[in-house]
Image (tube, rainbow, N blue to C red; front, side, top):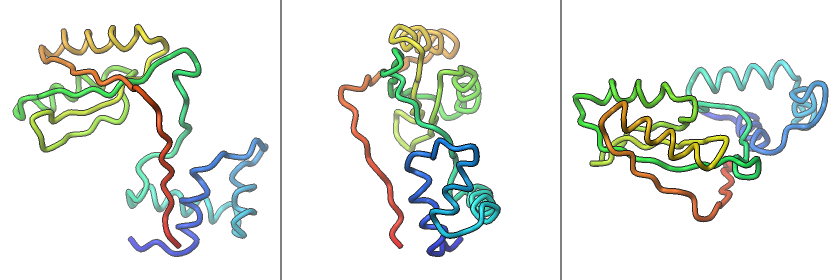
Length: 149
């Protein structure tokens, strides 16, 4: 699972805006001095090796009238999988992680309206019988991640 210089350049470049072009991967590959099929092959390999777990757009829900909220639950370990299935059944749930803490389930709610946060969290509480702690975003920070060459 060693990353070479090209892999690192790809990871760094893919975090920036994709070109608005008919073939955005070809444009990025050209920027990096590689063929499009090599770029796609390397992305596929890194995904298969779980170097990257997800590749997709980041939407600013608040700018579109929606909302984000970090949530946590204290799930009894023996019920974790059952609760996980119920929580993840909601399309508004993203980034669900298990933690080794009393609050062992953390996830993000992303909804079309601010009211959707309360409605979804309330529904999860009803379905699981477990309180959903809500940590609304007070201020947004963009933290760029770069892989050293």
